[in-house]
Image (cartoon, rainbow, N blue to C red; front, side, top):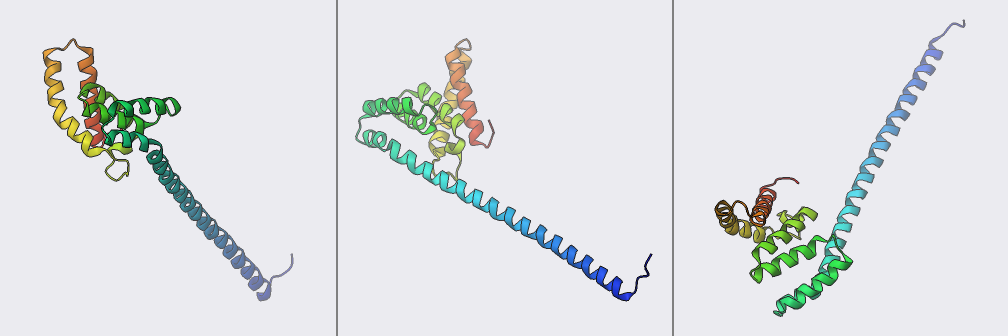
Amino acid sequence: MARRDHFDILTGGGLLVCALVVVFLLMVGQEKNTSAAALDKALEQQIAYQARIEFLHNLYQPVEDLRLAGQASEALLKLDELARHYPQEAHGEILQAEILLERGATKESIDHYVRAVRLNGDYVDKASPLTRRSGIQQLVNLRLPEFAARTRKNPQSLALQNTLTGLYYLQSRLSGGCE
């Protein structure tokens, strides 16, 4: 075996340091690429969410116009038409719940609110542009005691029990509960 002198040791040490620096730079570069990819993904999600909100606004604007014009029946017919094209869309459920509540159909309104919140929790999220939290909170505060009392008086009624369960579900979601 050949004898190593100071030059060989210095050259080997330099090569080792260079190799470690290259590995370090590759790791840091990979971290930056991962951070940039995560930022790009978050940005894409935000853009898609904003586009969805704009789409919903445009799609359901005729319903809102009919509702504001006092034409609730026509608005409900338009919602039925839209529901055939977008059967799992929560925004239609929310609008239907609001219109039914305005018309005094409380039980049916609660059913639609429950379906809407199950489909999209943004309707009870304070920070969401889609939020209907205050209206749902008001409904729960007003109707939960009423339906609880009615259910105690008539415990065999499945319809009352289902409505009460829906109100408890909405109450839970309003207080931060999960699905």
